[in-house]
Image: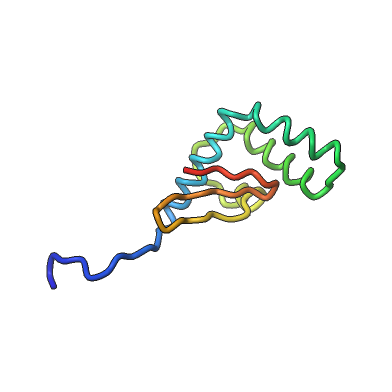
Length: 100
């Protein structure tokens, strides 16, 4: 029927996902001090793969960018989780999760 919503769609478009990832990167950049202790623990335990992902994320956080970059995100992003309530959680390869 015209003007009536027949069903609710839980899909999210690509632009919204890109904005969520950029927002998560900005939040991590503002709170990078909290990540340093986590990264030091990874280095102390000699977890090589996590060390690689931590260094890639650290490099990305040092850059000043506001646009979504596909190649940079492929280096650090594991997945984006979308809850039924609309909550978006961005999960990075080294284990950090950012809830938006």
